[in-house]
Length: 311
Image (cartoon, rainbow, N blue to C red):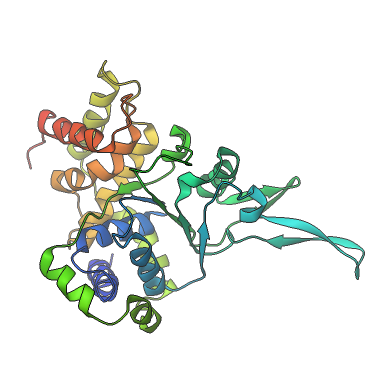
């Protein structure tokens, strides 16, 4: 396994994205982990913090087809998947693919679309396919949905159902930049101009190789049991309506492997698991409050309570 390629891969993407967004190395690293695992990202934060720009910078760094979809209440499922239209010249119906048939999808303000349209995204995210008029069409490979959501404004929005939230590999939040970084941003060249100058820094062959190789990272029995101890803790808590799903456990396992490889190791340690637990597990618990900050604090408390295996 080429551990050095994992480190180089992450560094090149991070350095490239830093030309657009400053001081968000950890968020970029987590997006890379999600991408290599084949998952999807929900980026939840206040307007104007650079969510869209970061995701566009990431997509340009990795190359491939990119489509941005602005989710609105009048967006229809067919606007995502595509339609069958009648070709009068050939006297036949032809399928015209929608924007979902791209490698990187930016679903902007996903909670502004109706549940019917949100559900059209569900099959594509999980099954890597869409069904139109009884016919099934496979998605591109790689395929990644990066959705943004405003957690504060609720007027005119449709909260994502638990089934769809669980489809996201990670839920991330960027937060504001540090003062010194913001000073540089407000006085520099226009961000859109910088984005146009951004180049692809990795190849599809490198991505495919790392996606196949990260599963070779060794996970000890102690670390496997540590993951399940964390998961079962949430399921036994009577104060929660629902604990973490099996999908959450699988995703934490994969993320720990990729994190270890990017750190230069071919084996997972408990710190790799703890590092990824909050962004992977917090949005999967159902507490009744719906407050994502409380959910993150809860997972943090779980990590403090569950016994960490000794090396």
